[in-house]
Image (tube, rainbow, N blue to C red):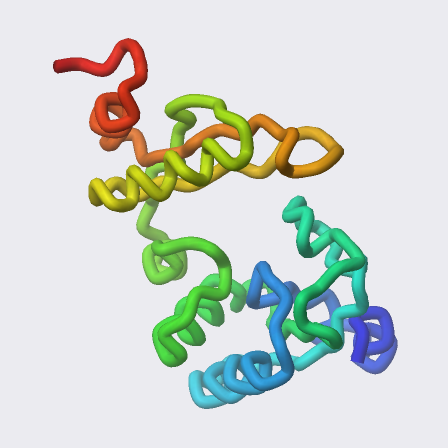
Length: 181
C-alpha cells in the first residue's frame, strides 16, 4: 500500500497517519516483513507500505529520491514519529542489520549524544570512497558526504567524514597537510 493510500485508510488522530519510515533505504518485501515482525514482537505499532519510485519524501539520499530502485517493488515499515528511534533500535538489535545508516542507533534511542562527523578533506567521488576504505583498514570509521550538486556521481566532489577524535589520525593516515607528527 502506498503512503497516500495508507493515510486515507487511517482515521484522524491515529499515530500511524503521519508515520515515519523505519529504514532510510528501500527494503525488499522479505526484509520489510522481518522488520514488521520484529517491531510487532517489541510491541511497536507499525504498518508495511509499498514505496513507489520517487515517493520517498523528506530524504536527501539520491537513491531514495530517484526513480531507480535495485529492488522492485520496494517497501518500508512505518511507525509513529514518537516511536521511530525505539523502533529502529529494536529492529536493528533483533535482526542484526543496519536500517538507518548509523552505528549508534541504540545510543540515539537511549538519548545518548554522539558527536557529529567532521570533514577531513574534499575529494572526487571515487577518490573519496578509496580514502574511506583506506581509513577503515586503519581502524578509523569514515564516511562520504552526500553529493551537493547534480550530474554524474563520478564528477562530484564530496567530503570525507570522520568523528572529531579521529581527525588528526585520519589526516596523518591520508598524508594530508596539517597532520601532526
